Image (cartoon, rainbow, N blue to C red):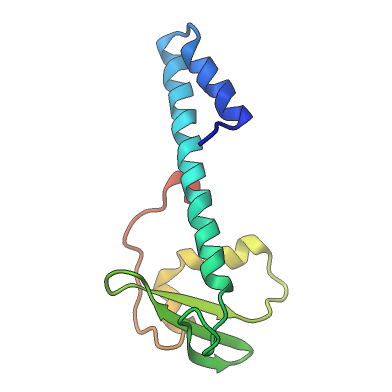
Length: 130
C-alpha cells in the first residue's frame, strides 16, 4: 500500500540521524499511524455493514424492537456468539461526542437496548479509541 505524505515524512525522519529518544518517539508515531490506518479500515467496514438495509431488505438485520422513536435491529456476527446491534432514531439536543460516548456505558445498555439483559466492558479502550 502506498505511503501517504505524512507517513513518508515520518519514515524519512526515522531513517535520518536521531538520538535514541527522538527515534523512539518517531517509532511510536509510526505505530500510531499504522494503527489509525487499521482502525479507519474497520470503521469503513462497520459503516458499510450498518448501511445495509434491514427488515428483510438484505444484510441479515432482524427487528428487535421499535418503541419511543427508536428502532433496534440485530444480526449475528461472522464468528462466535457475538452480534451486531443497530439503533436508529432522531437524536435531539446532544452532540456527536455525547452520542458516541454511549458505547462506553456498557453497564447501562440493559436500560436502553431491548433484549439486552446484561453487558460489560471486557477491555479498556485503546488510546485511539478514547
